[in-house]
Length: 253
Image (cartoon, rainbow, N blue to C red; front, side, top):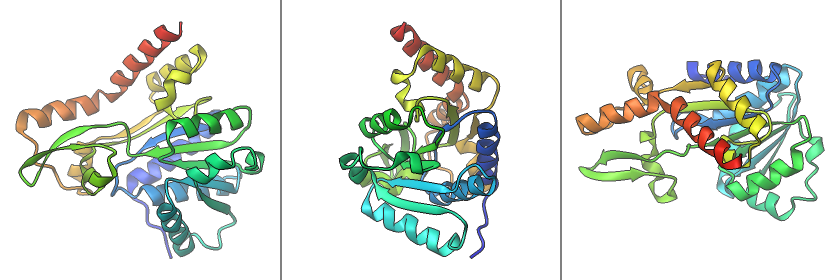
């Protein structure tokens, strides 16, 4: 079956390949549900393989259900590609951390892997050349209107049906830590690298507002003032991340 990627998926993949060629090897990707996150993850693995960077992939999923979904999508769209891919849950990885042949894999995709497990994985592969892509909905909490009642959209699984309201897609590259949310584990040099990445516009962002304008998602019925404030916050996400980095840098110093 032919894969038809949306413009932002193609741009994300192009940005990752460009960044790998610049020496980056770790990527944090925040994608709201409903924007083709799984297709993006698998397509990235294929394109990295086609570029001769690596073709052995370990895909770490958040659940057995997610393993089945990813495997089925791979079979339907990517079967026959010259890529070896293994699907496994993070819980299984956690129990068998020392027996996983980390050096065998060229690419490790982490889907909603919790911080403690990310730290263990990072310790295992920190001196290797592996490409990692840590993917999640993002650390956002948005107030929306749903059935005329306020709803806090979070990573609560019971509310995932409403997570289309999480605004924006964001990609940022790192050289040592495997997820920018683990900034507390970063060295001073890593923090400076992240600052430079943002300052040089090497990261990638598509706003909630843009998705509405492009017709990929329906606009949420926010209160007028709240909508303006939220969109402004999204447009200033890079500044907010820099402020976080500054605070962590001072605490580490």
